[in-house]
Length: 137
Image 1 (tube, rainbow, N blue to C red):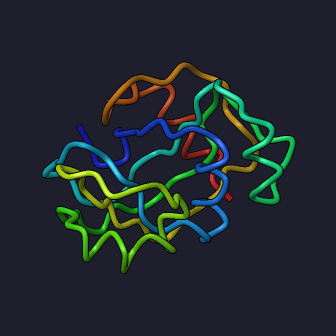
Image 2: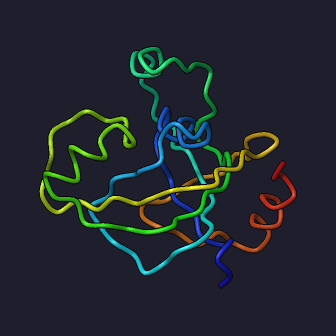
């Protein structure tokens, strides 16, 4: 399995904010040994009020939208949460047991590639990976 064959599903509008470079930290309840490229998939769930509050609209859903680099992962304590919350863009309360996934180098696909996502970090089959590589700008 190559690094480019892994993907992560993230709800909108968070996926869009990652692609814009406005969101550089994704918070997860789990860690992984993987570092490197990850295909960015967006789920089907919509929250129009949240979209409006963050200044985005007409976002693709249920599709692959780009690629990011997972550069590091760090456990979050209360101090890190306060320091990093502006990069995460979610102003909710600190919860113990969370991990900050540090993201960089977002690349948008030329257009959304509709496909189902999965929970967790998941493997993309070879045919879909070829389509995604072809759709990079």
